[in-house]
Image 1 (cartoon, rainbow, N blue to C red):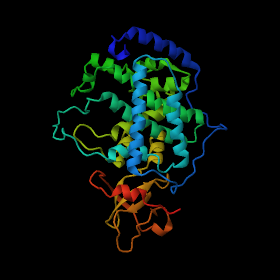
Image 2 (cartoon, rainbow, N blue to C red; image 1 turned 90 degrees about the horizontal axis):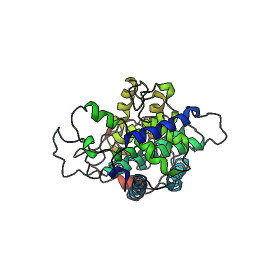
Image 3 (cartoon, rainbow, N blue to C red; image 1 turned 30 degrees about the vertical axis):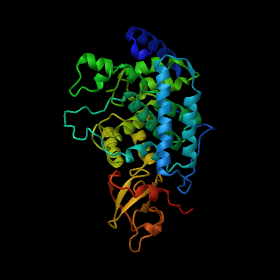
Image 4 (spheres, rainbow, N blue to C red; image 1 turned 45 degrees about the vertical axis):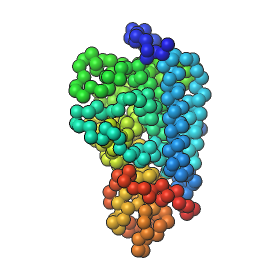
Length: 380
C-alpha cells in the first residue's frame, strides 16, 4: 500500500525526522570552495544541440522517469539511488558540453504551450490544474534539477555538491504527494490547521526518501531545508539564513524559478525575463538569497535559450545561446531575412554587433518559425 493511501502518522514522521536532524548536526552548511574536483565549464555556444521537438521528447521521457521514481517512493519501496544519479549525471554532462544552452531543457515544454479547454477560467479558478498532480510535481522537479545542476556547475562547486543540488531538486517536493490535492485548490488564505499540514511536507519528503539506499546526507538535509527562507519566514523551522545549507538555498531559488515559469490553468506561461525580475524582488523582500538569485540569472540568462525577443532593428529573433556575461547580450538569430541583417547566428557581445540590442522579450507560443531558427547550422 502506498504511503499516500494510508493514514499519515504525523508523530511517527516527526520522530523519524527529529532523529535525522540530530545526525545532521555536524554536516557543513557551506560548500567547500577549495576542492580538487571542481568542474570547469567550457564557455561556448557553437556545440551541437538537439532539434527542439527532439529535446521536448527527451524531456518528456525524463519527466516520466522522475514520476516513476516518485511512485516507488510513495510505495515505500527500497531502491538504490542509481537511476536518480544517472539522471543528474546526464545533466552534469550537458552542462559541461553546452553550458550556454542547457537551460533550454528546463523551458522547452513551456514554449510549446497551446492553451487548454479551461482557458476561460475566471479569477476564482484554482491556480493549478490538479488532474495530474503527480505529473505536475515531476515536471517541475525535473526543471528545477536542470537549473540547480547548471547553477552549481557554473558556481564551480565540487562534483559531489553539484550532484547533491540536482538530486535535491528531484526529491524535495515528493512529500507534496502525501497531502490531499484539495489543499492546493483553496483560493483563500489557509487557516492554521491547513497551514500546519502544508508546512509539514518537507518532513514528509525526508520520510519518503528514507527508502533510498546510499543517498548523501547533504541531500537529505537540503530536502528538509529547501522551504526555509533568508528572512526566517520559511518552514518547517523558521531558520535564519546562517543556519540554512548552501544546497538548500540554491535549490530553493531553482525551484522557485521552475514553478514560476509553468503555465497555470488556462493561462500561458509568463515570460522567463519577467520571472527573473520577480525573483530579484524576492531578494529585496529578504526571502531568497541574493547571491543565488544572481547565480540563477547568470546561468539561465535574462533571455534564456529558445526565447523570442524584439530587437532594436524592429525585427524578431530567437535566442540560441546565453553567455553569462553580459547578461543582456545573448547569441541570437533573426527569424526572417532583413535588409543588411544576416540570418546567421549573431553574438551580441561581439564588437561587430555593438549596434544591436534586445529591446524586449516576446511570447513564444505565437510563432511557428522558431524550431528551424534554433537548429539551423551554427557557425563555429
